[in-house]
Image (cartoon, rainbow, N blue to C red; front, side, top):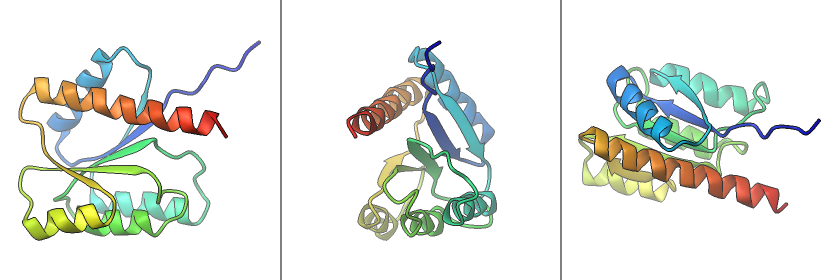
Length: 146
């Protein structure tokens, strides 16, 4: 019996459920297997980071998609915490927003994140979903080489 590879885990930190549904539909259209974990506010996101920092969580996502403006903690605070947490620090973080100041965009880039305008329609979500799956495939290819 051969071990089936585990599908990549994509973490979405987003308080708008409609955005999550559109992303999930786009991911489904890629035809790739995946696991989608959803966190709906900044406090839950900080707990997720703390669980990795303390070693209470072993599985890591291949990519993190995050809204910039979240309840309780903002996306910049969460991104800073991710970068200070060794098990998560290397993971690609894509910050999605409909409104970001130039200073917020600069800080996201300085922290190694990518800042993108939140998709405005399903076609854009489908394109984002394909790009996310490519990031995950790249991560699995690089870990398979180790």
